[in-house]
Length: 518
Image (tube, rainbow, N blue to C red; front, side):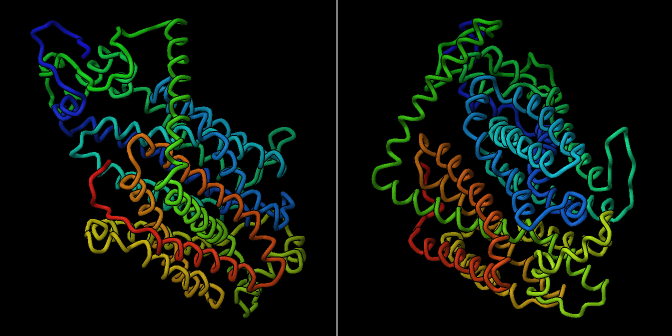
């Protein structure tokens, strides 16, 4: 037990203390502050898919270069996942959200200043490297400011924010990229697509600014032994939610059933920093030891199937999602040039070295027609609506335990069906259904791991799942251009094979989603 007041004070653990704060204006404000951070991840990962149709000629992008452009941000995320977790456990959630937001905004602005493809790839890599930290931390930060009653809805809010961010990005592309902007600043040349990239820095910069006005997570402060600071944070939440003074907060003593440190006053200075790093190193070593059960029965085979399944499904879905703006842009180009053949073979041939070179050399100041982005807006809107539709269904026990198998089975045929799409409408419908259902699959996988794996393994398993998913995005966007150059049916055969593998693996995953947590 750790006390922060006299012996006559009322004691409570964290769950009781946060429940006393209720749900009110503070919770609304913290979710408002989190939305730009959650959107920043979508902006960083997807912005290049909208930029490339306009910038491919100026940057002299080959088909492989386009794949690397889509993959490089995910490569940065993979490398930085574990270091960011170490920093967050050492320095605190709030500092990562503030500093990480500003640094990432600077990286995005540098990407907007890029004058060639190499510079753009380097800065987008660092964009992914930095944005991974605030995105991962904001999930924990939100959960640690809500009690058990409201915490389950945080995952819904996160999913909605990500889907909304994808919709906003497509709307910004629709409003800006068809316009003609060109100017020079000294030796630097700027086009519309660079202005678009600069605008995508707004969410992450706003996130860094807004979190200045929020306190540190009380749960994190308690884990550091700083119970006085945790109580101050809780009093601030209580006062804002209840419209009362901080002194009226009924809890005056905080307890922790399993304290990670002895109670202490708020440390400061170099000594406190050394203590934090020493503790973080011990936790890191303990975390490595906690990995041992993952390599023994029954978790080794289970985690292996889940990682492989998520690797395949994310590789497939991001191969479609990140190339979809290019597909719609090419369809529009074929229509403008009066080419009636808009089959997938014609589209892929136009984007390969054989068909794209002639048309792209005619003009490098390329601007997409607004109609090109309408299809992307529709896809993002359907994904958002689909998430709202499927979430209540996932609470039905008889359905949720089989939803993953059903969704993957349907998506196996949908991704193969893209090959037979020869109009914008058919491509739009198939792609929208596919991406929406695959979004449900990803949420189901996360929910499965929360239920199946014990508490001491849960965080590391989720981290590894995200890492395997991002690795799948990198591999997929590097391999897809190679398949496109082989023959028009090769990429669709490959994507169908990936979905088939994921479906077969799902047949061996038998999970009761409403079982108690262990």
